[in-house]
Length: 349
Image (cartoon, rainbow, N blue to C red; front, side, top):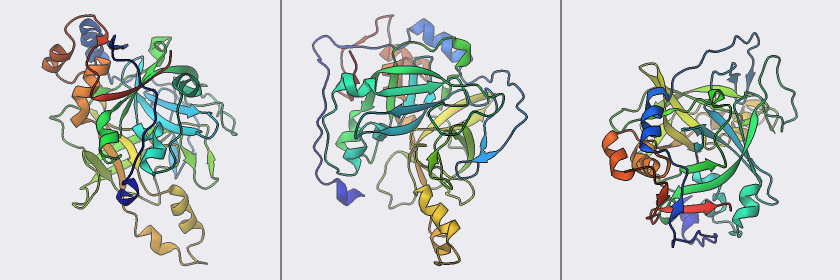
């Protein structure tokens, strides 16, 4: 992939720097309140039906993963599906390549006019079932609510280092999720937290066996592994890929989540991995075409480690893993950010 990134031309509509960026970040008081309830589990309703989908993931029960969101764009020629994670009632963490995928693969860059393009995105949240797929909602499942995107903020390093670092995007919704009790924002993993051996991912993604987007939120278990020394990517977490459970198309941007002291934390964002359709084809035709060997060559999935970007997230959202960092970036209730030289911001007027 690195060779295909030798020459990149980025064409985007940038916001004016003359008046700063009007953010929706938390105030110091809001940030303090948020730190007291982030990642806490809500009362879960019993769901009698448990099934298997999306590379053998399992259905999520009501409110079992109410931090998970699904982002869908219907923009002609730039259709996209990605997962995401709530970190406030108005901010989502997802992958930068969901919005700049053509850059990473050296495809012809298309001009993205912010108002029309960002308006094409719909964010599904606060429910396990999204109505955009072919399957019907399961019994007792809650149909997801929808919101629209106001801003997308990505680290400039993602462009500068040709998609090999900083595959992270902060999505600002046009309003806070209402009613607020439906949302379960997660805590950020601290820089001092070690990478856990066992984590989970919750997303809608695709069912590789049927090659279609699924309706129901599913969860898969992830096992972290050491990253290869020769890896092109920086600041990442690597996971073992399995023929039994794996990410699939539409899972990009979903959060790597773990529990610590009764709270859920996000530590990674799904970036790259083996195409699940390749794995499914190897399973389906392993006898006829000797495809079984491909299953032993799975390279592992790659997640962006959010910890090196905690200061960036703090600056633009007000969600900080350290009070000292909070006081450095957010001194008062002023939501205007003057210095945005470290970011590329797409803004919908």
